[in-house]
Structure formats: structure tokens, C-alpha cells
Picture (cartoon, rainbow, N blue to C red):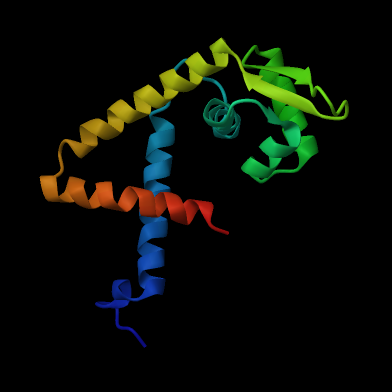
Length: 149
């Protein structure tokens, strides 16, 4: 049984520390969102997926965001009504709809990202060069952890 002093040296202890740290950072980054942005984090994630991947179907978006297609259809409808995305019929499959981020959606996404990146960059400047290097090395690992099921 690990003691309190070496709990972080176990995978379970490391998992607990990472969970807390990542969740705190996520909450802090959410607070730093652009003040003009009224979109939820979930809808911003949809804009981000479209920005990265280009045109996607409702099903692909739903799978990417791990929600059901009817839920994604509602999200896309709201984003379309606000002018953040556009929809069009698939060329060969009339049952599918393809979604693309609009210029307004892209601008909103990029302004929001820039504000949070500036905040985080300011925090990183307070770290030692070694601490920044450790985070630089950890970033792709954390990203990989977020992608695995």
C-alpha cells in the first residue's frame, strides 16, 4: 500500500494529480474566453473541429464530439442560425448534410483561442526554462492521452 508521501509515484497517484491539474487548467482557460463570445465550450469545440478538419458530416461531427447525431443536429442548427456554420447536401448521399465553418465562425474561434493563448503564454513566461521544456515535452503526451479510449 503506497504511503501518502509516495502516492504520486504510482500510476494511480499520478492519474489523480494529473486529473486535478488538468481540470483546474481547463476551468481557468474557460474563464479566459473572449468577452464577446457567448457560445458554449461544446459549440466552440464543434467550430474547432470544423476549422481543423474542414467540411464534416453531422455523423462525423457527432462521433468527434462523442454525442448522438440528433444532439449534433441541434447544435449545428443553432450555429447555422447564428451564422457560424453553413450546411449543404452531400453530392452523392442525399441523406447526409455537410457542415463548414463560416468566416464569422472562424473569426470567433480564432479570437477566443488568441485570448486564451495570450493568458497562458503570460503564465508560461513566469516559469523557468526547465519547466517550460518539461511542459513542451509533456504537451504531445497529454494530447495522446486525450485521444485514446
